[in-house]
Length: 373
Image (cartoon, rainbow, N blue to C red):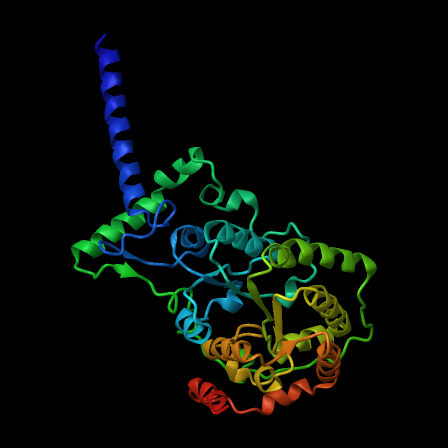
């Protein structure tokens, strides 16, 4: 009898403790899964995209979304709102497939019927993905934060990492840290700590191996795969929400990225895939598609890049301004000329000439030159 009473007592204690822990997590809600952040009491640090982005989508007020891969991480919502007259949020997913980003936007439209602008990067290295491709396997993904099943929320309410975040939030409050939230201008900014320029990317010099002898071309099977991916994960929302403006853009990878394609004999293949994607997107009047690949003042100046693909925040700022002004907009009238110029340049460019360019002592000098525009 005593043993039964002892077990019953411990069961009650454990149940009460779990109830308290769950209630505290629900109240403070560091992933903003249940409600908007309590920014009048605690400081919420935005730092984990795939665990916090859905909370932003669920519980913030906004009429514009900036999303995509790491190519969109350094956008500033303050600049977006000043240009477009919006109240925007930024929810990037580093390395994301088109499906992951589209799934996120699907949830945004369900939560925010007033959504009127989507700014989204379409990474060109994702053209050939399956329409079901995801960056992470389901077992590695926090599905419990994304679905509508309340029962698997136990993985959130009684999660060790979440408990640590709650403790840190309490600690900041006790230490007198002002309550609030990481700004969307700061969220996901990675630029600090990186050095840009040819000497950083290629300290021993850039060596071009020469164009591949065999030039690959787009196959009918690849066209089918591309069409499935684009229609399911890019144009479906534009078709469903014709009153919403979708500003899509191809991130301007550096000339070094194109050099890798040239060495592999893949430039024609890539441009043919790009042409097919463009033609699929231009079917929709509410899609505004931009490409900056022919802005060779950007793509051939490695002072804007920390690696062959990732550009500095001032390029994000320029992209916003160019989109607002309608520069580098692709249309049914100009896209073939754009593709001809792109193909001609990246198949004939002297890539080793990049070794001769000046590597600025201060990376911001590259921004200053662009700002003169």
